[in-house]
Image (cartoon, rainbow over all chains, first blue to last red; front, side, top):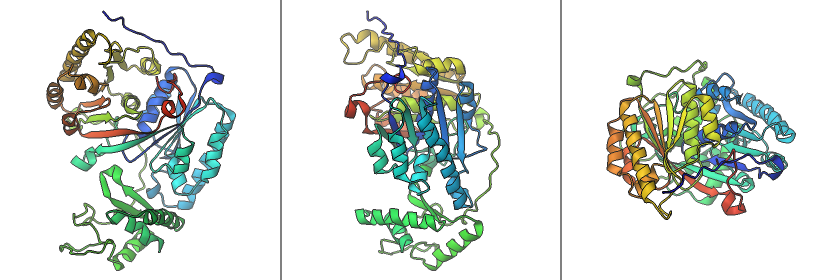
Length: 188
Length: 289
């Protein structure tokens, strides 16, 4: 009879943690969703978690926003809706820069154990933020801080700087094969 | 012209490295002129891309300009025998006959979960060797619970019951149930593990049929299937017979082709970099467990 092994994990003190830079990229689904899963795990251990969404507009309130509040985690939308629907590119750039200023400060001051920067790759690939400045700020963050960056088209420099990179590859998609659109509870 | 290179790279079958690089530069140039180019892969149309200006009047001007250069857009219905790499693909694009989309200023409102009869219950498979299979399923659990749907995760193989996700789930009021004993096919004595997996499957099969859950996550179910502990065909028929509007998520490596064929949404998580492999950093609470 095998004994049910029930290991208990503890969050290590900050000086014994390896802060990871995690990048979820690729065309498939699951980039933001996996970041939400990390948020759940970290919140379960009472770590302080912050999630900042660069592209979602400020009024957005999806299932994850509602549930995360119950876990005591705030998910902050910084953007102005999906970029291609916005009418003013200068405004988007300003929003991205303002969002980054806020995030850069959080990278320095160490409020959060886990910081999730959702859809930030777009700000880099559209050239709204200076990539080398972003990477320098990520590299100089406290050694214990986990940072998760999601979005397609992660640049080679970002991948180079990261510790854990997963590419979500699309194999089958309900919209492509069956014309089924986004549904509450699954996609939003 | 930068725009030309951007479009060429998407359309030609095998873009050269210099062409792709040109396209990236072109995309940035276009972005500076307030024109965004984005691919449509996440909408299930990997051969299409979206070119958008900002204000509707600018979009109209862009469409008019592209129509003048009908190398780029084929609006006629006649069969094309073009050999130009810039020509549109033979397959008619789903957008070809549609009017140009007018951006809507959507006011964000509360999303309502439709009744079961109006939902498209999905079978979702997260597979591959990369990280993020169970983690993405946890994200779905969070979303569904935020929508007030009944969601549960049943973990085959795993025996951990007090990881971060279990603690958080308790606070959210969702169930994460461990069905395994941590034993894999490599373990010395697999008889118990195989019996556990079968008992776990029987339990989950009844839950699927009972239709009480809106979202059911069967974590690592692909492994007992691969090891022959649970019958693939039985799983697929149970999925096919599930009550309408039930979403089922199955995670784990080595999803069988039959399971992939039976699914609506399949994502392959691919490792590009892993902290254990590159830096020998082991699993950490809050990230991996």
